Image (cartoon, rainbow, N blue to C red; front, top):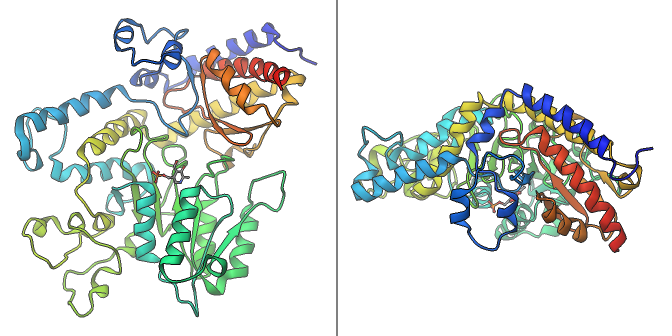
Length: 476
Ligand SMILES: Cc1ncc(COP(=O)(O)O)c(C=O)c1O
């Protein structure tokens, strides 16, 4: 049995991590990011002066940031691209909308959404015409539900979602049901794991519930990766099952996008929404994304005023969804852009879109999602291995609730702590220079993001976690 605080265990892990870091073909990308230092995460000030003097390449000074599932770190090139955008605005004013600048890598503001969609499309496995970079996740969810959820009180009216869905999804569904004059009591169906101690929901459980409510379900909303447990759902199988029963399905990909490879087009997904501030490193509250399968966004410009729905469906519309050719003609007849872009409402924040596009450049440097997933599997398995070497005393104080099968998870392990340990453990993390995310009542989520985390980060976390846990146990 291993004893608490056994430094020899950790030095062996450190040696393994050094070898793995040396072999890591994405290792150079860590340098593309600002990694906060241990001093940064403790300070109560911006600390700009200290920061300009500090060496950010000193690995011992950087904190252990394993929180990319909540907020991804800032790519260094974000500031460069934003400066270029600000320069355009400063020197060109309104001309920035239309006038390309010879020495700028940025598109005109009129084309910024199209370029962002082009960069985003390979991340989600879609044709660029099926992707729109717009609004925010919950707003996009409402927009898609307004277009594709048309309940019939005497026919298909139910929405199936998880019982423990992210609250914003839950609220969005509740409000849509009420907006259509229906009651959540009869129109909302929730799914949960049949086992109280194991929150993972099997594909079989989901299929059984779909079968049970198949005749009167209009819509299913599920997460690609469940935010709390880190479970990766079988998107193609569940999508096919929903279609077999004539049900439209929307995926919330907040935790899946930029984390696991997606093939939304080939999986025949109907529609999906996501945010860009987690694994996509767009920055807090940055602009979101939406996928609309090309078969669900067919438009005709020959619509008549009498039958507008035949032209562009019942979507909510705004001028940025209007064809670029006539957008500035100021006509009041809507000519939607073909594809997902036709679901846009307003001109997008160029500040946001520049930020997310800068980050997507790093995904291009990485060679796309395949090498990212390869490292993700290795580093998550290594984190799991490090946890397994902890002392028996410490291991009794938590359990991993994320599936152990690498095919059923991304780069996140959710650790459920014994009662009362969350608060003191979290406080101790700051002393150890560790940043992870906590979800009350008992879970910490640890996410080794392949673009910037190292295998040595996993060892640093487990060292600090073990000490924090054992100290926390004494304090309760
Ligand atoms: C799974 C999931 N869905 C929805 C949201 C809400 O996102 P937004 O605030 O961008 O609408 C989040 C935010 O973290 C999330 O994690």
